[in-house]
Image 1 (cartoon, one colour):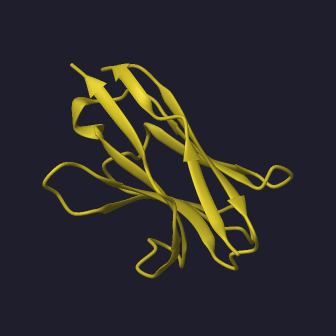
Image 2 (cartoon, one colour):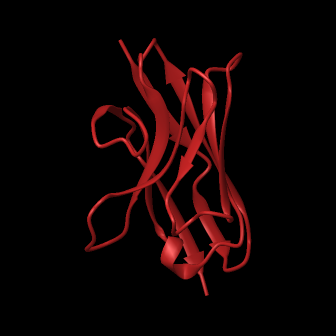
Length: 118
């Protein structure tokens, strides 16, 4: 059974950094990535990484500030978030889905809250 479990969320000041982790149990057969959902807004794609060749795909809103990576040995995917802004405040979800922007998602994590204070 596939499970995605996020960790690393919290409260950070604007301009700061935070790293999210997603521990993957089981074999998903899909790329891994991150979505986020702010209050009153739709869930949006943030980043994805191919499990075939580690190609990465980023949304325009985080390009240059966020980095997605993975540790194959630990079966974990990371989202390094730098230069955080108040508009990055959201619940961040780990996901397993297709590329490049996960229009299809097969598995979701439970989410972790990120709050950026201005």
